[in-house]
Image (cartoon, rainbow, N blue to C red; front, side, top):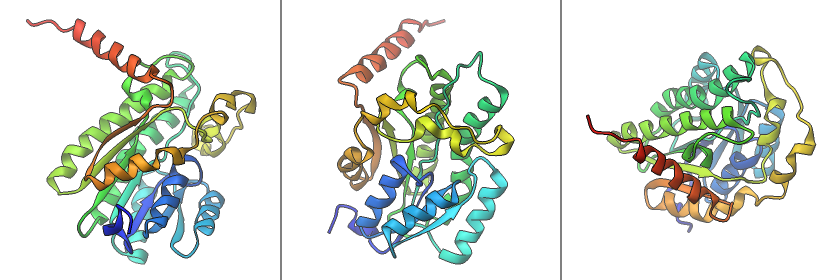
Length: 268
C-alpha cells in the first residue's frame, strides 16, 4: 500500500490535467488507487489522458476562468460522481509578456486563469470534499517566491497571486480540517510555454507559440521527478513544497527578495 493508501478507492479531481504537471498528478494518484477526474479546457486532451489511465479515470471539460462554467461543472460532478476526497487546483497558463506591454487580452487571460480560476475552483469544488482525510493541492510556481523578472514578468506576477490565494486557502481549509499542499515547481519539461493553444475566444483566441522558444523546457526534468516529494508531503498532512531545478538559483533569488523586504522595513 502506498503512502496515500487512505485515499484508495476514493475520488480526486486534478485541473489542467491534459498534459504537464496535471497529467503527472492524475496518473500518480490513479496509481495510488484513486479514481481520478481529469479536467482540462481542452476536451480531447482530457479524454486522452483519462483513456491512458484506464477505468479508474474519467474526464471533464470546462473553463476554470469562467465562474458560471465552474459552478455548473461542480453541480454536474455532485450529481454524477458524488463526493470528492481530493482536489488539486493545478490549471495555469504561461504568458510571455511584460506588465507594461502586455495586451488587455493577455492580462485578463493570465489573471483570470492563474488567480481567479484558482478561487472559482476552490469556491465551487471544496464544498464537495467529504470524508476523512480530505486534501486540497494548489500548484503555484517558484516564480511566486522571487521578484518578477526575466522574460515572463506578467506570468510571475500572476503566480504571486496564485501563491497568495493558496496561502489564504490554507488558513481557511485548516479550520475545516482539510489538509493543504502548496506546490512550487521550478523549470520543468511541460507544455506551459505553449499555453496560448488553449486560450478562449474572449481572451483573443488560440495562438501557437514559436516552438524555438521551448528549448529550455524540453531540456528540463519531467514533472514525475517531483512525485516522491509530493507524496511525502501529502502523506505528512500537507505543507509547502518547493521543487527547484536550477542548482541553487531559486534559493539565492528567494534570499535576495527576503533581504530586500527586510532592508526596507522601518518602524514608525
